[in-house]
Image (cartoon, rainbow, N blue to C red; front, side, top):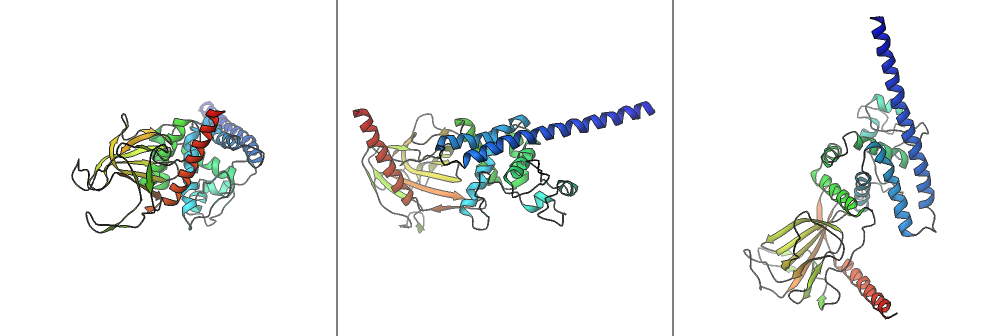
Length: 356
């Protein structure tokens, strides 16, 4: 009996030492990478691509604990997105945007909501961990916040189903979970975070015209305000995806006719309506990139499926932003002006390149 007790205690000690060793090694590896990333990201001589790669290295380290880099990167990007549009959330001006609430970090029953002592945080079942080996678990420290979120996600597993469950338990908001999943799928598909480019949604080689039609009165189907910009062009003019994204909605709508809704990595939903037809092969769930043809200008809508010709051919383009709570429309006209200018510039540069 004493021999069995001795072996059991010995097994417990060995198990504790192994777990402690793995924890120390993980922190050591992370500290080395984080210090390199921070020093390099602050170097003004670095190119944009170099900085992006360094930030990606920030997430790649967690492959060692069975966490795909794009899961952690997606959570961080989502947190950045909502901070950009919410005044009630402090904005973190650093590489890491993740902000774990005090109750989650320190523990619901912990009287110290800004507790930094790992032992007391653990006692109150808080999430907070020491990610850089300084003996403190500081929720405002990049290393600690990122390491804590990485450990939390990895404890659920590495599959998409596991990731979704972890997000639901943490955010308790289905819209937020779906948005983060979109970002993760885009990062996984393209293998990079550098998917922020936008373009004008009408092929620049074609004739078109538009003005600021935001807020104009619309009467069909009841009095309402116009939530977008109408870009007039001939039937069959190619319509381009203005961003990287995933096709969320595709089909007929009595107001928008044949329409497509695409969600991007910045919590924006891009709405393309009154199309004549869709690009072949496109379907709900398809991943698209900036400038990809998604359909063709038409005049469908304002009636049952197939209704067309009640107004001149044009693309109705709208953008909706999700702030973590609600989704609302905002005027796309200023962005369209900028994207058109950039597309024209690229066209000129391309022409000059061909001449030279």
